[in-house]
Every structure is written in C-alpha cells, then in structure tokens.
Length: 162
Image (cartoon, rainbow, N blue to C red; front, side, top):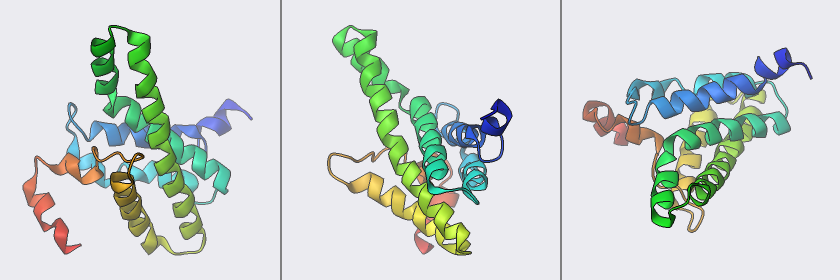
C-alpha cells in the first residue's frame, strides 16, 4: 500500500485528525466547539469501507484522543513509582483499550451508513458513550464527549431534551 493511499480517504490520516480534534475540545486546549465536528473525518473515512478498516480507523481515533487526554496517567504513575517507563505503560495500555470502544463505534457507523441508516449513527455514538462509562472494570467514565461543554452551560443544560 502506498503512503498516499494510507494517509488519505479511508487511510489513517482522517482517523488521527478526528482523534486530535476531539482532544483539542478538552482542557487544557478548551476548543470545546470541536465536539460538534470532530467525528466528521472518522465518519468520512469509514462511510464506504469494510469492517477491518473501520475498526482500525476507529481505534486510531480513540487511541489518539486518549494519548493526548490521558497524559496525566503517565505523570501520576511516574511520580508515584519514580520511573517514567512504569508511568508510560498504563498510559499506553489505557489508550489502546480506549481505542477499542471507538473502533466498535466505527464498525457500527460503517454498517449503518452502508445500509442508509445515517440517522442511527448518533444513537450508536451515544450508546458507546454510555457503555464505555458504566461497564465495571472496563469503563472510562471521564472524558465523556459532552463534558467538553462544561464551560458552556447554555449548551449542556438543554441536553436532557435529547
């Protein structure tokens, strides 16, 4: 596979861009309005792809986000143990695990869009957000996408209508 094909269209670049945009929506960056658009590159890259590429792209989006957003884990564990390698290990493992949830979403989104059921994609995203927040031992209750909007209560408070 050529680099051009890998980095464009259904390649890895849109997935990494989506993860970076998602991370930029959260502190310390605080570009919170990106939560309304960060999924666009991922969805465009999985719209007409097979499940294997959809999982890869979704995993890359989730792992990219987690590597930026969960940086505090490496700092905390490194200070606690006095070792940077020990601090980086759980950080990388958490990013890899987090990516699985977004990979599953990408497969679902690809299948739904392939069947013309675009309107179910936001429901699939909400389902993944709920599942990744409550499954015991495998949950990531922080960094729920809507929490990036915490500084804008006018946007968060009406959310219960949806």
